[in-house]
Amino acid sequence: MAFGQLSLATGNQEYADIAKKTFEIILSKVDNPKGKWNKLHPGTRNLKNFALPMILCNLALEIEHLLPAGYLEQTMETCIHEVMDVFCRPELGGIIVENVDVDGNLVDCFEGRQVTPGHAIEAMWFIMDLGKRLNRQDLIEKAKDITLTMISYGWDKEYGGIYYFMDRNGCPPQQLEWDQKLWWVHIETLISLLKGYQLTEDKKCLEWFEKVHDYAWTHFKDSKYPEWFGYLNRRGEVLLPLKGGKWKGCFHVPRGLYQCWKVLEQL
Image (cartoon, rainbow, N blue to C red):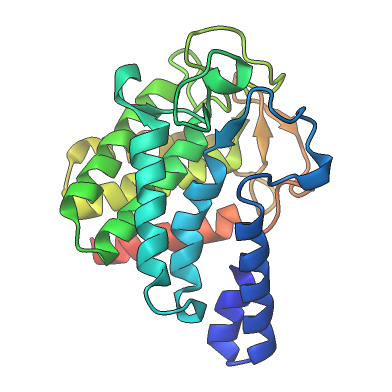
């Protein structure tokens, strides 16, 4: 994504080549992203994960100028189908699950019951962008509805904020950090809610935006020094004072604030 946009900004072919090569590597790992480092035994509980079709929805648009003619449309339709028809489950009230089996069926195991609200909500602004690109208001409306469903589902009614991981059956999640409140979950939610309001004028999006905005700016922002803290405990207290690390880099916050700024300029 970075090299694709860098090639667009500079015209440097080397950056374009790196972006295309990386994209090809990603596609080659669709069926087995971890390769020889996969801990699963072949043939046992084969699952497909939400992450790849979700991120391709955004990545394909960002590197559109590097893709062959017609490839973007094909990729968009495939990703939209996977995200909206396979991982989104009407029988579960319209929530999005993180893993299904290779045939698209629900699986009753830790991974199969996992719900990651932030992932699902982030994906919905990718889908809204695709809906705008394809001139499909029905797709935008559905993405907006799923955004509202997922934030209501994932919101901590007692302490506020959005859970990191959940179990669709209410069983204990296997992730020890399941009840933490993470920076990227909340900034991505702000984007989806603003785009949802901009594109559908549903006031529920604006109401939730104000609620999440107030939580984010009173809990994640360091009042003394710039930047956001990344990890809060369930009560909203800073769990780790570090501002950056292996998982929290200079990505979600600047991208999120930029996205929100550009939408707000148009309202």
